[in-house]
Image (cartoon, rainbow, N blue to C red; front, top):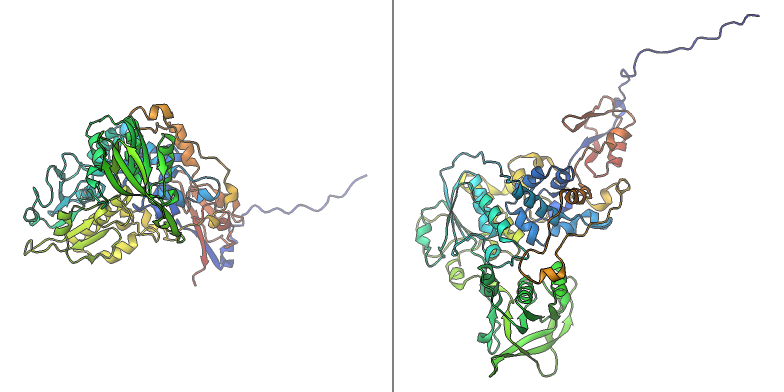
Length: 581
């Protein structure tokens, strides 16, 4: 029996490339990096998300250079910054914020061990001379970027070493001197001449500055604010104690000691006194939650035995026959607690509380030197940037005067190291544009990072950050189903017993593996990190990859504009727009 053959299978040896389905599209996806909230929150505008991406891949030197592109004091900030970037971190809504501050410190530490150097500036000499008065974080930053811009910079300071409060007011257990000196040497290595022992108004006269093309004054605020209470002359200056310790003096202080104030300086004084053998108590006129000191400082101070006594204000000090002091304190009571502000307090009924102490240290805030403030009355003209910088005209100093700018603690509402760095960078940007005959306003807007006042020199110079959208990626814009929960590892520190024995830094070094794991937790908000979701989910296979260059592209001949790639992008590094006609 024979069977007839069945019908033949029809097969095609061609492709479907001829069917260009992109003609159906009315929406067009494209790659578009955006702004991460950590970068917007950083006053210095650091490219934190990109640095975390590099660190997570083990490219630690490039991560360090990425941060240093906007901030020459990355190691210092890794030690003492109040890290507003972490408060803004989207990861904080998922589990815990990324340890940005600790990673920043690790990157600087590793660069120092590797004897890394910053790239040599390629700017030709401009022939312009700039005077920077004050070698604190604002002055250092301004001098660094002006020098890299090709200008000749003379940096003047009243003290014998640069650094300002970093060198003479922050204890070694928070900021080791070896790291500070290394980073300052790097920052001042290009086109900057340092002149110590030159105090403005005394050994540095305004006439000495008349020959410069521009002057930036950032002499800080070192003058203690008077408390105006009886017996104030019996009090010691807390800032003077910190400076003495940084110079190598270690006086022996015993017994109960009072520290007046509620900021970081007051806690630094108290923690230093613990290490000197005293039993300090910090007295503050408002509540603990109203203290301007940072949460981490408060926690560490309490761990080390510092007592906090809130709602007590000093009213007088009296020296007793045995050499001790009687401190009188008035109880305070809260009257109003405005939302988002510190509580308002008034004296409570009753007689003052009296305590016996061996010493009283005042750390209730500082102000600029009155002599400097008097010289700089000026006209107060604001620059277009205006957040950390002010242009002034000193009275009756010279006829053909160069422009003078104030920065740092002289104008900042929030006196922190990173705000001072931002002020110095702003000064370098504005002065550089002025010397080059360029308008500041448009360049400033192009260089902004988000909406909080920070800006990027990379963006201003047309670097790779200039293509990013100003849009700040929010947590609800991330595809968080692609992220795994990962707890933040605790930072290695000395034991409590070791901490209070001396002034060595209490933070211990992170290993490379610890730093990489910490950086891997970053969401890289708004940045493509080549996760390949777009490639894997594209139904038309129209996403093209260059694996060697790490780049992505879209073949619009076949992309139907379904938007799946945009929806499945974990980091919101793509946009879906209407097809142009």
